[in-house]
Length: 237
Image (tube, rainbow, N blue to C red; front, side, top):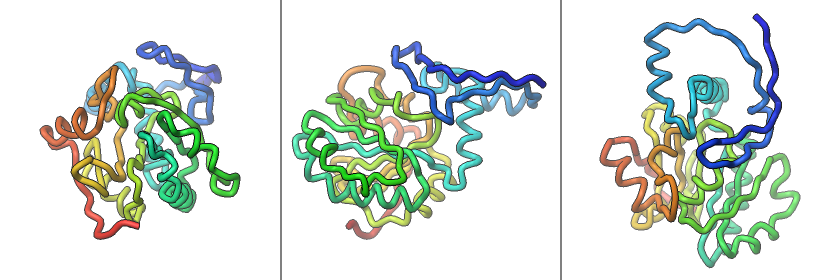
């Protein structure tokens, strides 16, 4: 078998976004044999956008299978006009991600986000690959519009001013056992705020353009098709 490397940046034709090279995106080409039944399952996950082809799906599934936690990248959403009030929760989230060996984190902010990003010190981000994004298209729209920051795979999202006092290991295992597109732990159920875990398929359910909120534009359809499950935590910190 002959392997060839592909280390160049890649372009998502659906968005025109350039995806920078990273250890997860440096490719080796190989040929495999697979049963028709498994290939059919792979084809069902191809959406032509986020999971663009069979190779992309297989890579995504292998990434999840070989990561001991099933989550290797996290996101912190800090939109609105009170970005500075997210700092205590962000600091806690960074520390907990580091403890869980989740090495990559995207911090996505809105108009006032510069105050928050400039407040982060080297000690708080030590050991983490923190990437910064910006959007003013709602929380779901912000995730969609910054997906060039993510490698294929499961995402853990903090979208709250207060961090739920959750055992992250148990939260992740709960998501894996129930095999849904979204697992949510609400800190404010009325606003759909809280901690989420999303399978790669989540981008199928976010409107392809414009302003989009999880509360009104994503979670209702996931609930309708029983693709969302709630994880309950007793307290927040």
